[in-house]
Amino acid sequence: MSLLQLIVGPEAGYQIEQNGLEAALFDKWIAASGGPKWLPLAPLERHLIQSFMPQQHSVTFLGTSSGAWRCAALCHPQPAAAHQRLEHGYINQWYDAKPNQTEVEQQCRGILSTAFDGGQRQALLDNPHRHLNLIVCHGRSLVASEHRTVAAVGAGIGALANVLSRKTLSLFWRRWVLHAKLLSPFSALDDLPTQSARLTETGLIDALVATGSIPLVLRGVPNLEGTAPGYYYDGGVTDYHLDLPALQQGGLTLYPHFYPHAAPGWFDKSLPWRRANSNFRKVAMLVPSAQFIARLPEGKLPDRNDFAKWGNQQRIDNWNRSVELGHELVEAFKQLQDDPQRGLMRLGD
Image (tube, rainbow, N blue to C red; front, top):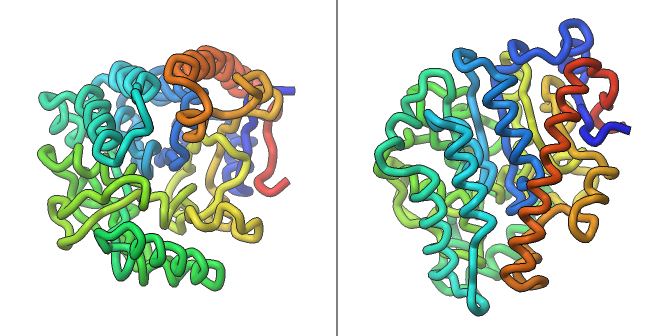
């Protein structure tokens, strides 16, 4: 069994069967929220951006939370180096005690400021062939309160309302798409109320911190450049795994992902009837197999619980081991290029 699965929507499957697994088929690349779950995918993502996608091939990137951080690295003028700096900083977080919100935010800002040094931020946004987009959520109603208890009540009400309809999310969190280029295929989303603004050199780090600011875990980032006044939070609240209608347009979408399915929003994780379907008809997901995951430390993907479960050094060692094993996914991808049928699965199978 292949260590890497190619899970495709019907149109993506047809085009890959007809043309092979070719970079020219893809004009979008998405990356989901999920904390450190991305780490085993890191070597594969660097291989894809360096060796699979030609440098002159234009690709639009969209991410939320840590997925947005990865997308920013891949849009950097030196993507592999930026991606490795991001990986190193992410893995080597060190907390002497249970951190408060300020300490975590400071570490996040340090990771991002190192990965995206000031001299290259404008070049990242101006990249003519790699177009960065990310999603943040504008807190509304009770969830916008600076009092944690009030915000928690608001989040609970929002979660219950979401069971009835995803459209109720806009009562609590308003989706904002922040984009590097003047025009973005994601700025006119209509499945939820959506507003958009341009990313700027001076506002890039704030935007990246905001899209990773999990409500109740981290404070929101206030007053992002070009947006409405207020606090901005993790884009994964509305768009956890990026089940978006815009993915049906244009070419295929490449999706290195850690699960064989996609939940639209964060509150949909435990709702099995809410899984990506029609919006993913032109999506090709690259997903580590269960066989691969069983070989990771403790037989699981890295996750945020590792901070509390393991000491700093044990967590760092285990996360580094996950990345090391991730190099096997690069070889598995090369095998998929030779024979896409090797690991091909239909979405929902």
